[in-house]
Image 1 (cartoon, helix red, strand yellow):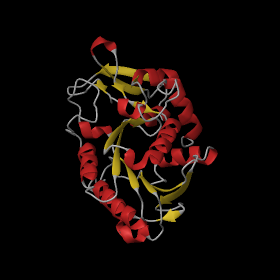
Image 2 (image 1 turned 90 degrees about the horizontal axis):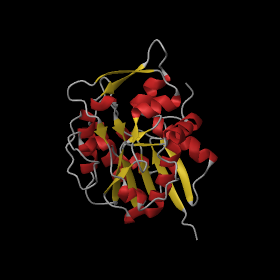
Image 3 (image 1 turned 60 degrees about the horizontal axis):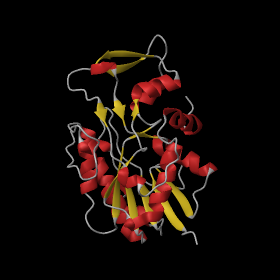
Image 4 (image 1 turned 90 degrees about the vertical axis):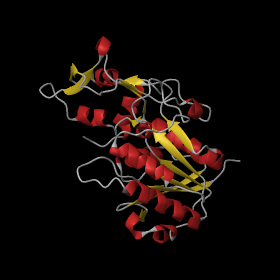
Length: 280
């Protein structure tokens, strides 16, 4: 019998949250009843400043999926990432939740490794965002079991595609060129694929590890994404300190989730964004 789970999605109004919600509206997850939180226009209206009691009053729930967080922007308070994580974790216990998924970022690893990062690598973030996401992970101590999802790039919510959406022949995307003439290589995942992965992980619950890398089975070149989309771009010499390859080892995830054969292809991910992304 399929397990029936009551899942509260925190941060449904963010860019990733909106794409996931559109997917699940068309293809409701089997055995999962979703309730969406947002500061406005959600099934539940709540802000982290209201504290855990206010959130817990909407329970009970079996799982929390925490998408909410502060991303880099002028004046952004990155410390709020840890506040959100702690507040949701406290509320999860009050709601009787058995497990929590906390979205983190591959930025916690830093940029110095010369191999795909695995969950056993010691985090060494270099950016303020990476440091804030690691602090959010580490703010969870005891209580409801929690898996931090170290996500690569969700196509359609990443800087490259946001720049691509605004590009033109007169204003092409600028792409760093490294030795050999190649551009950057990164770990990506399409928004529909991410939704299906999250369904798998929600059902797995507390059988999950404390941290898990999230991405498609193989990385993709940014140049390939732009060319597949037909986006004008121009190569420029990579500045000092730029890193060509920043990728994730997602072997642990592949042991848990069966990916579609084309999940890592540029065309497949771009098609998902076209279907689920915001209208430009």
